[in-house]
Length: 426
Ligand code: PMP
Image 1 (cartoon, protein in one colour):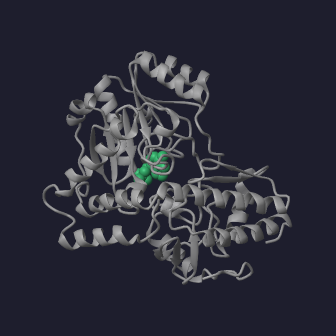
Image 2 (tube, helix red, strand yellow; image 1 turned 90 degrees about the horizontal axis):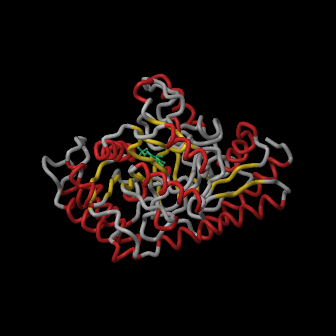
Image 3 (tube, protein in one colour; image 1 turned 60 degrees about the vertical axis):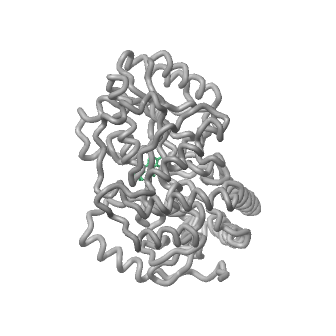
């Protein structure tokens, strides 16, 4: 299906449903990033009905090429045939079971082997694994392991980094008591002096630093870690005898063919959190660590009704196979490069100044001089009404289902939107 850049999508049903939603579901922070209020209100679809390959379909029947990929999980495209066939088989055999599913051991062994020094050529980081559902489950677990292992309370994090909905950089922090936050402190990304100050302020009390492999905060250019910053983190942690928790939930499987982003960037983590792309849309997350931390981890209470659901684990096994067999890492990277180059050239043609940052597989775009991301939202709104989802406040994601034709169509739409923004048109 090709979209005419002049034909605007009708969103009547979506916004009628928003009115119904707001009567029965609290707004504000609840589901905020999924809301059109987080993107471009009135221009983005609010409710979706289905998804397939690179496309999502909304309740008005509009089909979009989607570069948000469910905020990261979709790396093989929606509805990947082999993954869904495996998941459907397990769903029919049983998903919620009274005891552990047999696939749990297979998945743990598969990941431990995948990330062994023999496979990666790098230091060990994944001798054991624990599975859960959401990223927040395992980032929270990781901090408990670090605190228990070191006997110290403080977790240091980069200011504004998101690691889940518990305690730290939760926007506003409503409902989180001050006392609950007092053992968290912040430093600035890529700022060695600020990092060292944070360690000094908390001298003798630091359990861990938690970090994403790259800085991908909303509304900022993506920043890669400098070599000095990586070295400073290692040095500070070593002298504090504290642990490095790597939060690879969003970037995982998009920065390194093994799936573990830190291998591309030189970090040497003690604990690594994965989620999102591991299940290609099936809810599964994982915490990994080395043997030295296994005993401590065994002592941490960690439980969830659905942590042992069988279907997402079966799906994850199939995701790993497809990821390797179908050269997904290379395809996703190439697709991202094509998108980035196309968008940069389109902006240039209309004299619009933008910055495109980040790895090709999860790029970010911002307009120059864009207070409150106003231009970005207007541009993304024009793009969405023409059938392409390029989020104004969140990095984009590529999947291996994005074909050259999808990308060329997206670039054509993006170009028309640059023209409209450049001319001040609505
Ligand atoms: N860490 C990072 C880097 C994330 O991007 C997210 C989710 N966007 C989380 C943790 C939390 O994951 P979840 O929403 O699955 O709890």
